[in-house]
Image (tube, rainbow over all chains, first blue to last red):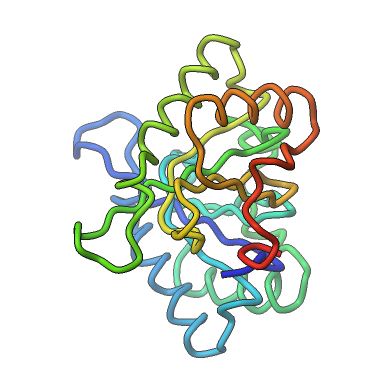
Length: 108
Length: 108
């Protein structure tokens, strides 16, 4: 796909329903991934940017988790509005969305 | 897990056996992931570094693919020796392994 300007990693890790850590899949991680893909299609972002589903990123308590490289910014608790903000402000605007970042003690 | 110095993403994408693009899973992507984890355990790299399995990174023809951030270096065709070299030279030595990179036209 060529090296992207920014690469969005979306956790879609699954775990059993009674697992103490929960999982990003149970918190809507797959919906978050598909919502990023919808924006990528709609705004023709493929090529300049990339989005990839991935396994556990370790911030399970703040899921669904999204990590954007090369900055290494971890976002948590995302919904459709959060995805739209990351696309507009971070990917297209090159400015990380401070209000959606996980706390520094989780990903300092 | 805290923000790592470097984050290793290992493609473990699956596809049907007769799919024209092949897949990193069919080329040993899961073995590559487990080999990284073995080094992480043996050398106690967890915390300073991270390794995560992920979906398609787009360099299917050169798989199994590994992408290291924040540098954004894409490696291909990895085996156990390749994993050991990335751990020693890129993660611990902070010097990407030029001989294992995919061609610039794949990930320029």
